[in-house]
Amino acid sequence: MVEEGAREGDGERRVKRTGRHSVRRINALAAAIGAKTYLEIGVSRGDTFFSIDVPRKIAVDPDFQFDWQAEQKENVVFNQVTSDEWFLKCDVSRKFDLIFLDGLHTFEQTFRDFCNSLAVAHDRTVWLIDDVVPTDPYSAWPERLEAVRLRKKTFGLDVRGWQGDVFKVVFMIHDFFPMMSFRTINSNGNPQTLVWKAARSNFKPLFNSAEAVSRLTFFDFQRHFDVMHPGTEQEIMAAFTSSYGAEGLGKIHND
Image (tube, rainbow, N blue to C red):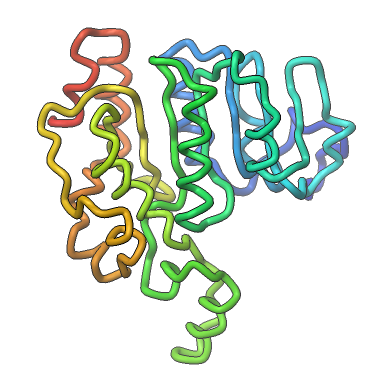
């Protein structure tokens, strides 16, 4: 969808209505790490993708909500396939500096996207994972239409907000990826988790069971919210951008 005043086929000049927090954060990260390559999983209307200032950008979505063929360029490539299909066929010798995961809001798919993206990452790659903090038990339900229907049936509220159970991905990283550090931005827009390669010296699994993580509920999430290692956008972005490139990059996990 293109707003009034914007031209179809001119994605770089679109006025964005949503995703401004993502654009702000991703562009700040791109500038901090000097990103040359960017991968976005889950693009939809391109509200975020078109505003990212990185020389080479790759978009993956099974159903783009714009004329993606008209937007195709040498260094801006659109792949209208599922993320599973794309990862199966992608050139793993080409690595990405910055990866944004905003696909299907389910634990299984987002975790698979994260694991698959490791094949196209290098030691300095940075990830941003969207929709990691559900707002209520309904928004944490893995089936969107059922979540909306049940919320409306219970409260009479026609609220479409839905984050799914993506939060479990962060719990999996916490328990099974001790070589990855992360912080969850929990202010100034939709909460998102920043992930980078840096060993956690204070590593200690909480559940130590993938099955236990897969069965977590919204209330378990609330009970163990500190696992997300939350902080404000200003705090986390400032700490990360000042530390990237320094020997102590991983230390911001413990700030």
